[in-house]
Image (cartoon, rainbow over all chains, first blue to last red; front, side, top):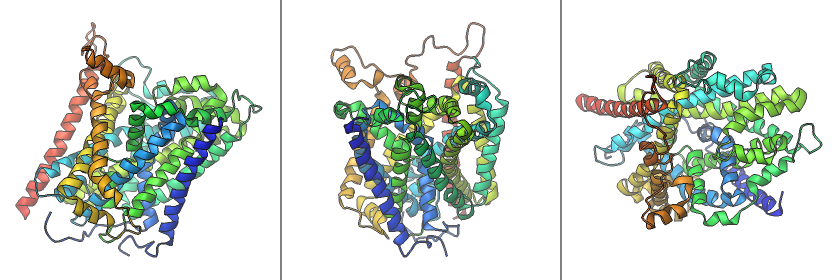
Amino acid sequence: MTTAAWIMLISIWTIVISFTVGFYLKILRSPKDGDNGDG
Amino acid sequence: MEGSVQVSSTERWGTRIGLVLAMAGNAVGLGNFLRFPAQAAQNGGGSFLIPYLICFVLMGLPLLWVEWAIGRHGGQYGHHSAPGMFDRLGSSPWLKYVGVFGLFTNLCIVSYYTYIESWSLAYVFHSIVGTFREIAPPDFFNSFTGAGSGGVYFFPGEALVWFLITLALNLYILSRGLSRGIEIAALIGIPMLILFGFVLMVRTLLLTTDSPGVVQSPLEGLNFIWNPDLGGLVNPKTWLAAAGQIFFTLSVGMGSIHCYAAYVKREKDIAVNAMTAGWTNEFVEVVLGSAIVIPIATAYIGLDAVQQATAGGSGFSLGFMTLPTLFSNWGWFAPFAGALWFGLLFFAGITSSLAMGQPIVSFLEDEFDWKHTKSVLGFGAATLALGSVCILLFPGGAFDEFDFWSGTFALVVFALCESVIFAWFFGIDNAWEEITRGANMKVPRFFRFVIRYVTPSMLAVIFVASMINPADGNWTAAFGSLFSWSGWPLAPDSVIGNVLHVGSQDYRWFDADGNATRDLVIDGTRLLLSLVFAAIAFLVYKAWKRKGASA
């Protein structure tokens, strides 16, 4: 793989994984979790 | 639009994580693994990802918020399908007919999508029993679907059985309802999909040129996807391809996100939920999707063959026809690898098909007061009828027509309409309040401007481009041809090109022996799709007339 390809892969994967994990943490830390239904 | 908010007595999601995974499952589909890597590789490699992420932020994320907001707003009035939701966005009586798209797309797409899903299930079985050690996958595929039959009609006995099994499974899950059916399927399906994908990704990236059968490093395949061709950034084709991929991967413009969001309570968050589901789709697509099919294929058949196989912008032939053979190089792990790959595609498929079924079920329940089981069976009967057309006339091109008109064109039209209606008819103040109410994050105010101006403009560009897409996607040459008074060279897969049968040699409905031709199947399918759309519009008319009479 070229250096440019590695840079693209690592930077885009980092962005995507960070946002994905960040939003899941936000949901899991939310006190309202588990209460999206009637109960 | 005016009137008191009714709290629907219908069921709701059991947990927030279940809702998010169901929404992610709706978005994650076969395209994440088969279409994305081919599109990236063919449109500038790593530099494709720059317009791809820009389109995700300026069009994808805003559309997700718009659809979640329209859905939750409609749900407050007891509407869980698009016609009722759009009726509540303004006072004009025609708004509910825009919602017809939200039923038409789901019903028509699920009819052929369930068929592809059933192929995945069948391929899991055949991988485990070792069929692909004896029959070459392309030969198997042709005999399985009738693709190589030479005629326009084929009765694929085994494929039909797998389709019925898959449809029955979908109906069973839908019949169990939202929290006990769809949510449980998502809670199992999405983690399994990610696990299967991760195992395959690790196994692939551990291949070296010393491994048996390997002709090239799998990293050459990754390089094919990720090496940036910066010239692509100034090519309109790259930007249109990126916008198109973002649009189709998120399952927007369908009506299924609206439906799931309609079961969220009025004061609950949609901003973070939509982000989480959207980014989960991106994780599956950009991380797992890029690291499996093309790297494996490159390792065993070389980069030249992979470039050829993905030239059309799809990795379908690699996924279904090439990979099953290549897995045989993995010894004892081969049947498991096949089962993991097609199992992954099956989970991606079923979580999407459930999301397409629920809006139809909800429409029958809400607007015609049908019981849940009766609604599910009604949806099943309609899917079976339309799916049979796709299956029996597969060699004649009915399947591809369903995919083009309902799975491509109608989505763009619906998304363009909804973005304009939500921002301009419902009003940006109402729209913003709806998106941000109960939000667990501060939605950047910049998106208010994006939702009002940028997203509709981008969708309008995609719409116009799909109508007049030039031959080979070469816009520069097309404008050159136009300004030299040589006309506009339409691509056969543009909307106008499709309507005019551009590229069709010797267009006729019957051949010299009086046998039906592919052109007859194509025109017949278009007529059928038009009738389905008209029938749904009539049902909407009847439902509102019935309500008017009972009010």
